[in-house]
Image (cartoon, rainbow, N blue to C red; front, side):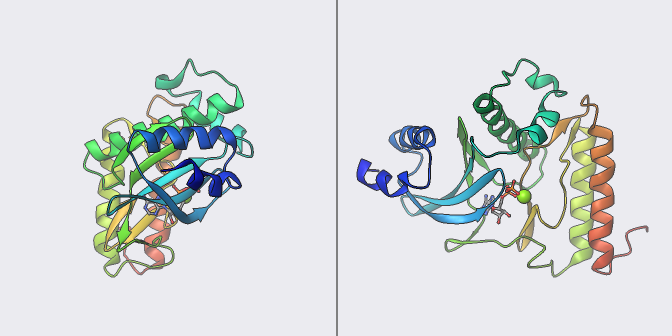
Length: 221
Ligand SMILES: Nc1ncnc2c1ncn2[C@@H]1O[C@H](COP(=O)(O)OP(=O)(O)O)[C@@H](O)[C@H]1O
Ligand SMILES: [Mg+2]
């Protein structure tokens, strides 16, 4: 990636994020940032290209994020006790946490985007989609076989819980429909030692019931 190309994006990214993107591109993780897939309150997700392959880059905003929200999911997690509380540091830790959570989920057989690399506020992962078109969230494209999805997602939530982990924001907004369900947005996920873990687990279970009962699945069976 040439510096010229970066200039295009200079308007979108702060200097600091640009530096991080330069480093990752220099190391060969990607060549071009092609466009935005989604924008959010805390992060934007971009499609990036490496050779003929696409990847997704989730870039956390370091200036405008809702830090207070993030902090509560970090401070009770034994993995991240010593985190500095500066704004930047907090966002880096969040990105690192999301990366580690993706690895953890993948290791337990939960289908998530494969995590590739995380540096500072940038997380690069597998692009979920076909021919460069990102898979829609399940809210937009409901599953063809809701019962099968319900069983799969419930089993994943249980598997994670049994292995000491809770996603914490499981819903039709954080599952992509790529034919099969792909769980995303795991940054808030916590270990069971976290004081909110139990409550988050119950909420995940309740959210799945709410979502799939709307789709006609008998969730109490
Ligand atoms: N790996 C990915 N592949 C394709 N699209 C993705 C990927 N990760 C996220 N997205 C898209 O970006 C959106 C926001 O990502 P998400 O992780 O849910 O962040 P937020 O914290 O903003 O909710 C998702 O709804 C989805 O449309
Ligand atoms: Mg989300």
